[in-house]
Image (tube, rainbow over all chains, first blue to last red; front, top):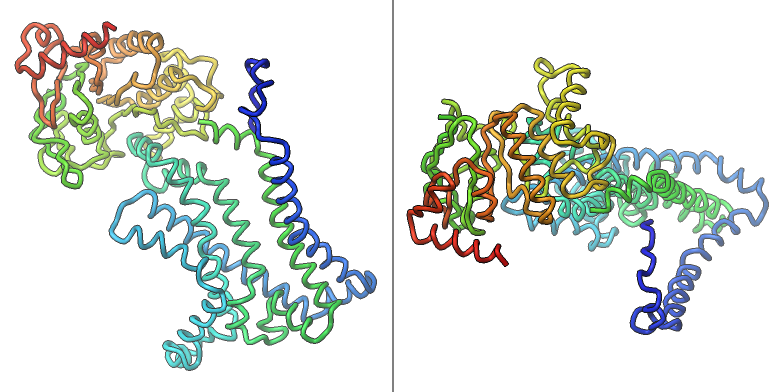
Length: 293
Length: 246
């Protein structure tokens, strides 16, 4: 994005080895990264689409509008619609607290934010069952109140939120740390209250990182399998999200339907990433201006 | 008396930054806080701005007790050492921020704000750069924007933290003259922090020399040079003269 500086003294650049890496190293690094990407990222992704379309577009379309498939898509989008805003609010609040204040337990909170990254999603799901399941700690209480968590929508949202908790906060913390408190303090001396300062000074300064975090969180939330699988109960048309429905279909040897849904899920994620890159392209000048400093 | 600082102390995690500072600043005065790094001059300035709350002591400004008033209610203009301009706002938006931030009742109209920003741009000689972002400005220009932004709220007290610290010698001299001229025109009571005695002596009406969180001496530049009250003051002034003559 930044224009390369033209070499000021061309004569010096002929002393290659001191200034440039050897060609074999450059080639090796490029080959490794491109090769690995192709092998584990691109090829499988293409396979999903090929498998989905192998028996013709008609079967693909039929599988895509099948009631259980539609219900799975609706459920996945609904879960995201609740979990992502929750994690956005949590992420902003946590990043704000960790970077702009010093308080007892700050280091602990920073470590806690990372916890979902290191705990296996299956374990996260099990923890929720142990807490909120029929025989769990809060089970009797929830039953008495008539609230269903496990094997219900609330459980899916909780599992997804738990697993994708760090995404927004993790994007924001480094950038907010780098930006420091100067601008907020300047706003205070100019008479701005905390809300005005947040919306006019802090938020515009973190908006790109925030958007990046929200989109990553969305992509991850749509694909969440492990924790959701534990709390869902796999009830078709009711608690089966897209990844779970893919598994159900695959286990029934219904590979066209399984791959169709998998392809749609992959497309949701790809659209999310495409949106992010489109934004970055459209605002690349502004982004560059903010980064230079 | 405009600003009355009484017996201010401030400790940061065991390190005492201010040990009972008392100081009086007159209405319309241009006062320098001079001292080596670690003498507490920036901490004192931040206490005045309301960005640090002192452990003990009182702060009175024109008869009002400021000691516990939050920064945003003090109406004190501050120019930060690294300017702290709002990086996503243009020059105009930066300068107008304090006016837009006023509560609805006292907020000037759009036209009035535009007019005020125009006048400030003329005052700091930045006409033509209205639409630039801070990253598109030189250090000296950023400094001028920061000054205009602080003056926009019509502060009764203006604070400057090492206002020329990050600038090269030529820009530094130009801005010094500009700052003094602006002071003559606006007559805002001004306190600025510096570690450069030459700057303090050249600019200020009076200079307060700080050492280890206490005020060693407060005097006019001429008096300070002729009769330093303590060996430290004499030493600090002469040492730096030697340094700057190189």
